[in-house]
Length: 188
Image (tube, rainbow, N blue to C red; front, side, top):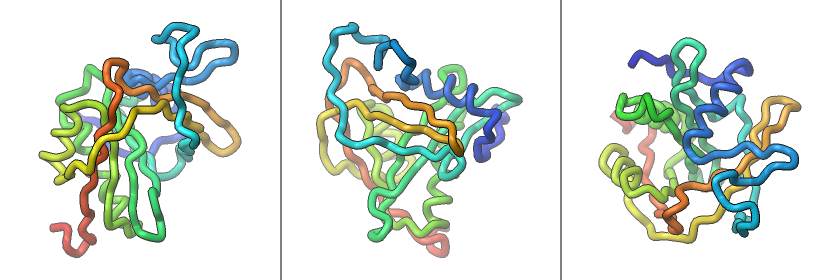
């Protein structure tokens, strides 16, 4: 697969959101339900924090033609301590196993290093993703914590998109992973 890895552009947003929908992310629509795959009377536990994603920075896409095949973004867990965190990485089902996830992860890790991050945290409910992070990027598990829905506000200038990321319905615990990010001089 010959996708281009680059920062998103405003015209990519519809395809970008189609991509993240394949990874249990739902845009909130007026009058709808937060998670259409759950019963309307289900009680959702939401973390008491909103994940803010400025789509103009710290975001990367894998794009082929006008189709976003993969997306990732990151933020600061603690900028003073130089601890970064992943927010989301996903690849459309038809493009999985093509190496795009690794290319996106490598690109965001490079940007984290460029911005001075020394430690990277991520959380996953998927055992195969946990193994992928450990085997390919040197993560180690710190423990587990209960899964909570994450309310997201994605924005581009003055346009906001609200959504909720559920994760996998058959799992209720997240694995917290961490890895060290060597400085650019020591990365090779």
